[in-house]
Image (cartoon, rainbow, N blue to C red; front, side):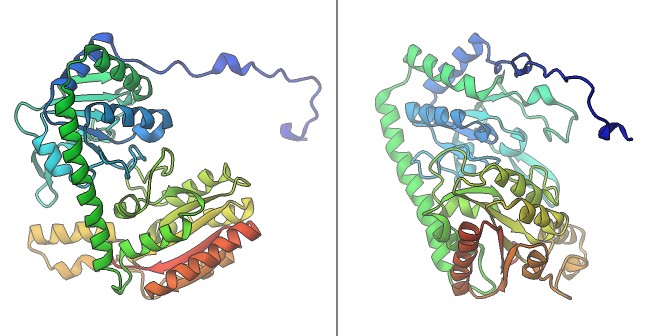
Length: 410
C-alpha cells in the first residue's frame, strides 16, 4: 500500500498557527519620516506617484487622507487600485505635465520608478529625465528587500533623494501625523492648489467621456465603447475587476470609488496570467453575490485554456469578456517600431501575429468546458444584451460565463 493510502496509527499534532504569523510591517526611520514631511509641506508643486500601494486597502485610505491634507495630485500607475478615480485629486492622465513640473515627487511602491520619471523612446531605447533639475524624489517601498536581479525586478536604477524602506500601510499614517505636528504648510496655498487641481481632474474625466462619444459607433468595436457597455451592465451589481486593465479604459470610464475593486494586471506582461488569476480570485467570492469580471485578452487565454474547465468545475461567479482583436498586438506594435527604426517593410509586422485563418471560436471553446458562451459579437449595440444574458446565467444558474467581443487592435 502506498504511503498516502496507509492508515494513521497515531494522532498528528497540529502546530500552533500563532507561532507562524507574519512579522509586523516595517516602519521607516523617524528621521526619514520627518524629512519627508518637511519636503512635502514646503513644496509648491508636490506630486504623488503610486503603483502597488493598493495591495493593502488601509494604505489606499491613508493615501486619500494624505493627498487631502496637502492637496497633492496623485498619479495612479495602475498595478492596483491605488487612489479613487472619482476623487478630485486623481490626475492620472496628466502624468507627463505633472511630473515635469513637480518640485517634490513622492513615489509609493513604484516597481519601475526610473520608467515613471523619464521620457522613453521605444524605437531607439533611449531615455531622458522627465523631471526638472532640483526636483526632490522620495520613494517608500519594501521592494528593495526582495531584490533578485539587477534589471528584472527594478529595470534601470532611479536616482532618489530620500529612499525609505517601509511598508506604506504603516508609513503613511506616521507621515500624516508628522506633517500635522510640524504644521509647516500654508493652508491658503493648499486650498488654492486644491481648487486648481479639481478643475484639472474634471477636464481629464470630460476628455475620456469625449473620447467615448467620438468612438461610439466605430467598427470594429472601439475599446472605450466595450468598457462602457461592461460598466453599464455591472455598475448596479457588487463587482470586482479581477484581471484585465484593458489599456486603462475601465479606470477612465468606471467609478473606482473604494479600495480593492481592481486586483491588478499582468506584471511583466506574462501570457497566460489572466485565466488562472481570475479563477483564483473568484473562488473567494462564491456565494457572496459579487460578480468577478475578467477583461480577457484573446492571445492570453490561448496559453491557459484549461482554466475555463476549473472555472466551470468550481462554479465561480466569473464573467469573462473577451477583448478579442485576433492579434498578438503587443508584438505587432513592437515589430512596427523595430521595422521603422531599421528601415524594414512595416507590413511584415503581422507575420505570425494574426489569428484569423481560422478565427478562434471562443464562445464554443467556453461551452466545450461547460461555461456559458456567447459570440463573436461584432456590432456595438449587441454587446449589452449579451452581457445581460451572461450575468443572468451567473446569478441564477451559478455558472461562469464568457462573452466574446471582437474589437479594434489595441
